[in-house]
Amino acid sequence: SMAAEFKHLVVAKFKEGVVAEEILKGMEKLVSDIGVVKSFEWGQDIESHEMLRQGFTHAFLMTFSSKEDFTAFTSHPNHAEFSTTFSAVIEKIVLLDFPSVLVKPPA
Image (cartoon, rainbow, N blue to C red):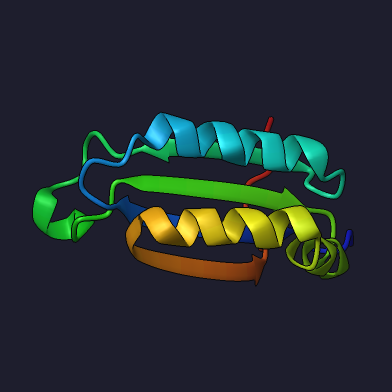
């Protein structure tokens, strides 16, 4: 079987008054500049019940071919720089980094 892809999931709530679009532009530049990022997607919650959402509004998901590629990403100078910027605008955050278990592949 193929080696599991590695996922980097960020769930965040931005501080009051933060223009999320500017942060997203920075994130898009980051993933474009770093080749080991296999794919990147994000979304803003529009459906979840407020109580279930716990104040979180945005989700960001990056896919890597391997844990090694993820490690290369996190140790990249651009990532360190962006993390500093990102941390400053975040009220709260959840981070999960995991080997992916693919149960139903895309058709």
